[in-house]
Length: 392
Ligand code: GCU
Image 1 (cartoon, rainbow, N blue to C red):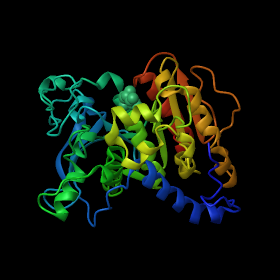
Image 2 (image 1 turned 60 degrees about the vertical axis):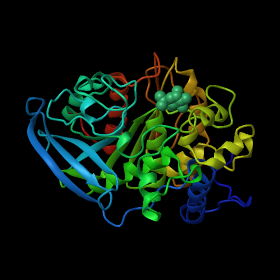
Image 3 (image 1 turned 180 degrees about the vertical axis):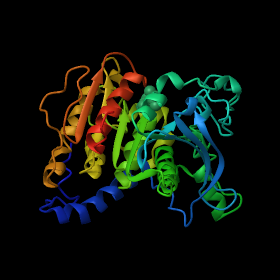
Image 4 (image 1 turned 90 degrees about the vertical axis):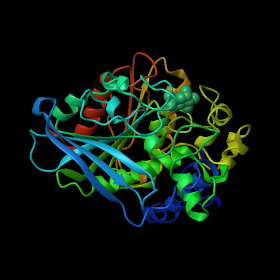
């Protein structure tokens, strides 16, 4: 993998200043130009509208806020956020921010969470023609550890990717479609301008805009989490926005946490043919020659330095290349060292069930591609360590 401490023109990064100034800017530009496409512009104003507050979530364990984040004038994407804040802790609390697949109503059983209006995957329980239904309520609750998260003193904010861009190669109905219509009323987004991962990362940023305004949340301790394609998104969002203080791209694999230069698991040629809309058009030019990319995925981790990053995996999830992901962390470590912090503190891939120490964490459990409460145990342990949260 190319060394993040070497500029595009071949000269070396010699100081922290070189890194924080010119090289970071260059990498952000290269990643968007060749791979993800450019993120939509930051809106001039982001407003939020409070839909409801219920102080008795899960028998009083937390307060549930339902909020709509308005990313622009009428017609611009509206992101519905489910925010759960623990009642038992005083003072601003750290928050996990996650993007979900099937709507906020699928994450918890609580009947007061509205069924999402946006497109959902056909694989979501109760989905019909891209629309969610009551049958989907709580359908993903077993994958999360919502109550445990609140008990451990963290807030949880979640939103659905469908609010920003539906995951369909033939159609873009979200933020890019809105932007195209802004330019001209019949305008359509073009493949050059479209990259769903970039759009979703922009969605993370807009929800961060809102979280920063919440007095009960600690704006310095926002952790982004996502599974698989949503993990690719969480990592890109953190790489491009330092307000995200910690990131956990879970089983994110190709186009996220796994190297593009690899013979293991998913290749960029495969991902580009099945999910062409996730990346910009230029990325396809590297299908057969990933070694020509002027960066690899270690560049994204390097952009997160010195912030904590946890790569979490499952042994049977070979498609997302667990050993390759370890090598990505290794290849980002030099930037952590340059900034004077401990990055990856282990030479060998940690054993199953063991969370490695250092700002660059690695965790692998038994089993398959999925998100489970065991994964959340690791997420919480990692966040406790780096956010300095004491167990009660
Ligand atoms: C597919 C895709 C992966 C992706 C995964 C997911 O398997 O090939 O790159 O991570 O879907 O999002 O679940």
